[in-house]
Structures are given as C-alpha cells and as structure tokens.
Amino acid sequence: MSEQTERMQSMYHLQHDPFGALVDAMVFSGAGGRYETAETIRHLLTYSQQDSLVLGRAGSGKRMLAQQVLKMLEEHWRVAWIDGSETDSLVELLREIVGQLGLGLRVDADADELLQRVMEITSARTRSDESFLIVIQFADRLPIDLLAKLKVMRGSGEALEARVRQLWLCNSLDDFAAPIDLDDWYAHPLERLTDPAAEQYIKDRLIAAGNVSEVPIPVKDIHRLNHMAGGLPDRLNERARDYLISATFKTPVKGQSFPLTHVIAGLAALVLVVIAFVYNVSERQVKVTPVVALPAESMPAESMSAVEKKLAEAVANVEAKQQTVAQVAVPEKPLETAALTAESIQPVVASGTAQPAPEVAVDNPAGEVPRALTAPVLAQTRLLLSADPEAFTLQLIGVREKSKLDRLVAEFKVPESVDIVESLRQGQAWFVLIHGQFATKEAAAQATADLPATFKNQEPWIRTFQSIRTDAGL
Image 1 (cartoon, rainbow, N blue to C red):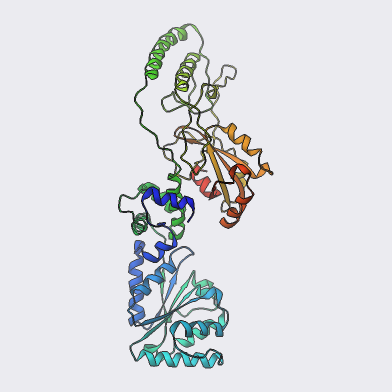
Image 2 (cartoon, helix red, strand yellow; image 1 turned 180 degrees about the horizontal axis):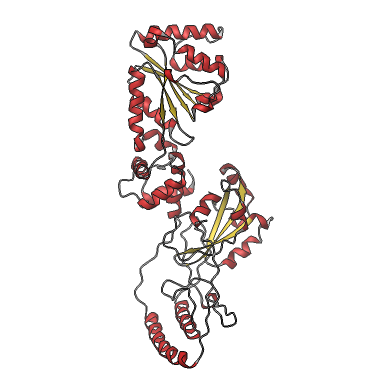
C-alpha cells in the first residue's frame, strides 16, 4: 500500500482502499442497472437456449459483472475462466477447460478428439445435476479457429439442454475476427454511468471499505468526476481516489479571535478614506493594478487610486507583522499556510493608465476539484501545456514562495524536465513543482530513484497531465 493510500484510509477511517482490487472482490455495485443485468444473465444461463455476450468499453465493468453472475449461481455450477488475450491454440484452450472444470481427461490426445470427449463428459455429468460454464474474457481477441470450436461446443438440437454454457466479455461485436450469429446469443450492452448512478456507485464503494458516515465527496464534484471519467466505473475509481488523496494534503485552518491589529487597521482605513475624499477633489486619480491576489479581507483586484493603494498597503503591513513566512511544505507533511508579506504586493503603474491584470491558469496543488476560486491566472507552464495529456508526471512539492522552488530547479541535471505551476490556494498564490513526462505510472515510479537528494526520502505524487489541466480548468 502506498503512503498516499494509507493516509487516505486513515483520514476517512477506511479499512481498505475503496477503489482498489480488494473492494472489487468484496462488493458489487448495482448502480446503472448492472444488478438487474447480472440477474438477467443468471436467468438466461439457467433456462435459455441462448448464451450471453456482455458488451462494453474497457473500464465499463464487464469483469465485475461476470464475477457477480458467478456469485449468484448455485453450487452445482462448475466454471472455467479463460483469458482470450492469452489463448491462441485449441490445445491451450482445452487444457484450461479440462483443468478448471475438473473433467479428469488426459490433455495429450488429439485436440479434436479431446474436444469431443469434453462434450460427452459434460453432457453426461449434466444429467447428474451438474452444470458447466465457460467465461471468456477478451473473447473478441480469440482467433477464428477457436471461435469456430467454441461454436461446435455449443452443440445443436436436444444437446443444447446438456451442453456447456458460455458467457463472453468483449468490447464490441465489430472487433471479432469472424461474424457472430446473434440468434445464438443474447447481447447485454453496459451503458455509461449517469450522474445519479455515479453517486450510488461511489457510496457503495465507500461503504464496502468501512465508511458508514456521509460520503466525503460533494454531489456536484461526483458529477464532475464522472464526466471526467466518461461514465466508466474503472476510470471513476481513479478519479475518486485522486480526489480523496488530494484532500489529505489540505492544511487545517485554526479558528482565530479577531486581532487588535485589525481594529487598528480599520481605524487607519477610516482616516484614509476621509483623506481620499479631499484628495480626489483636488488631485487627478492615478490608477494602479495589483499583480497578485490580495488576501480575502483585502480589496478586490480592480483599478485603485493612489490613496486606495496606500490603504491596501497599510492593511497588508499590519497583516504581515502578525504572521511568519511558512517553511517549504512537502506532500508527506501537513501543508503550512504562509502569509503575504508587504514586499509581495508590488503594484504596477503604466503612465497613469489602468492596465488589465494578466490572466493566469489556475492549477490545483493537490488534485482537489477547485471551488470558488478567484479570476483565473495566466497559463504559463511550458511542460504542463506541451505534454501528452495521458502521460504522467511527478508532483514534488508545493509552496507559497516561488523563489524557494527556483532554488530547487537548479538541483536537476536537466532543468527543462521540471516546471513550476502557479495557482491559487485559499485565495493566495501557490506554486507546485512538477518533474518529467512518463508513459506509465511504473515508469514514473522508477524515475523517483534519479531525483535530487532533496527528494530522496519523499514520495512524489504520480499524476496525469490531464488531471492537472482539468483541475486547473484548462
């Protein structure tokens, strides 16, 4: 288990990763009509002359559905599970069927003779109240000759009542090497999850992992994650896991009493407002535009008069005196909130004319779905915007002061492999350092061994560029 997953389970009091393989084996979510589909398939396998085809894109939950069907079958069923992507000969196919069904046949005989013996024995044992089922995952990857042999195994006429039943899982009928006669099959397409179905799916997964309280993901964010996942359960698992892990990087904000310095600043503001009224009557106003976002208590980022600028600086100076600059925060430790210093507020004056504030892309430092952020900031990162959206990168660290990341960039042998992504966090500037572009998560994990000494004892967060862009609203 990764440290990130362990931290997520601890934070939400979960016994297992709610979106991992262990929960896959423990629970089946019937969201999106999938339970009804499983019950239909069970009924058809027991009573119908037709076998069943489950159709759906990768990640739509075909395997989970088939496993649920097996759980619903009675004890007298004998099942063989075949991986069509790894089976390319009749001998190999029959060896798996004989072994998993427990037929007790020698597999060194002629393949066609062995196929005939399999049909005879299963037919005889069916009369003794046994039933046999072959589940073929990736059935659309089977060679033409194996498809033909499986059709032979279906038998004909009266033999249909005593034959080995078949359940095939595939992406599309168009992907088969040979046409499929739908008179012999009942097709069950798996639809994408609707937003209400996604809500139920997330809830089911969390309950299976031990979460008995309120779902920690707001409904509107579940809908957003579902759209990002394209309605596919497997991808929704990944998005929801990233969402919950991101919450473990948030810094808790402690309640504070109203400070005396704010009272003083308020009185100073009142005096300055009076001065501003007199000043604006006799003097021409000079407009300025702040470059960075002011704290939540400060004035909005609009054009300000010279006196209003002084007022903003006075309040910022009072704030700066009661706060200390945060230390560099790493993902493995709780993030600390750093204060904006007086020097960090540098207005720009352009010949007395108000200049519009540049637009900057909002990045999210911890993969959380951004809510109620201020106006977006300029998309300035070369690596984030040029990389393959499906590629992976390492998110190394997040800080309040960009200068600290500038020093870290110098530690990399290839500076072009790293980038600093600017965003907003709790209304203030936030900078994240990312490194590398990798085709797989495994490649990204291996690359951590080559990181500078500063990051040797850390566990970087492996993310896709698309997840960073989506969270940033790009």
